[in-house]
Image 1 (spheres, rainbow, N blue to C red):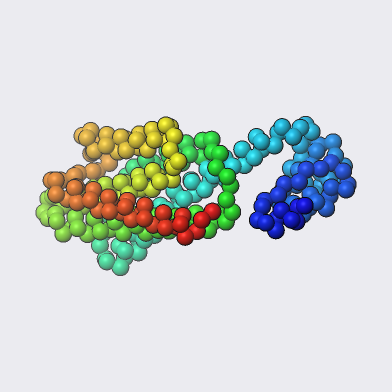
Image 2 (cartoon, rainbow, N blue to C red):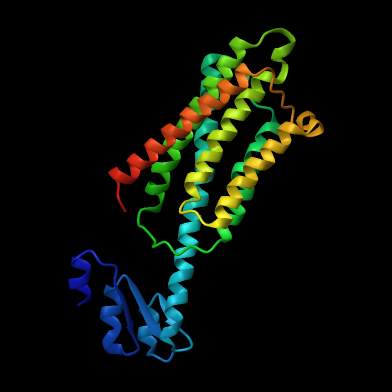
Length: 261
C-alpha cells in the first residue's frame, strides 16, 4: 500500500508499533512509531509518539508547516536583498559612479523591509502545505525580485545624477534611489505576505507608515540623510518603483504558472 500510494505521487506516512511494521515504516516518507512500540520500530521511525496518542499528529504537522512555510518567506526576503546588493555593487563598479547609499540608508531599508517584517513572519502561524525543493523555489522568487529591485534603483540613481546639479545634488541623488528601493522592497514584502490576513496587512502598512514618518519629520530626515528636493525627481522615483512593482507581479506570477507546486 505504501508503494502504491507513492507511485501515484502521494507523500505517505506510516504508523506502527510492532516488528512487522518496520519495513513499511522504512519505505514510507514519514515513519511514525508509538512510544510503547518495539525497539526496532522506534529506531527506524522519524517520529516517536511518546504519549502513544495519534491526536498529537495534527499539531506535529501544523508545526512543521509553520516552520517550513515561514522559513521560505523569510529566506526569500533576505536572498532578494542579497541579489540586489550584489547587482548594485557590480553596476557601480562597471559605471564608475559613487555608491548610491550611505550606511544609514541601508540600515533604514533593512529594518523596515527585512528585519522587523522577518521577525513577525518567522513566528506567525502558517497552515500552508509544505512544498518540495526549498532552495529552488526560494531562488526562483529571489533572483527576479532582486534583479528588478536593483535595476530600478540604479536607473533612478542615474536619472537623479543627471537631473540634479550644484548644491541640490548633495544627498538628493541618494534619497531618490533610497525612495525607489524602499517602494520596490515594500512590494516584495507585500507579495511575500500573501495570502493576506489583518495582521499581515497591518505589518506592511506599518512599515510604509514608518518610512513616511522618516520623510516628514525634520530631525529624522537629518538623521537618515534623506532630502527629496523638488517634485519632479521624487515622483519620477515613485514612477520607476511602480514600474518595478508591476514587473515583480508579472515575474512572480510567471514563476507560479511555469513552476506550479
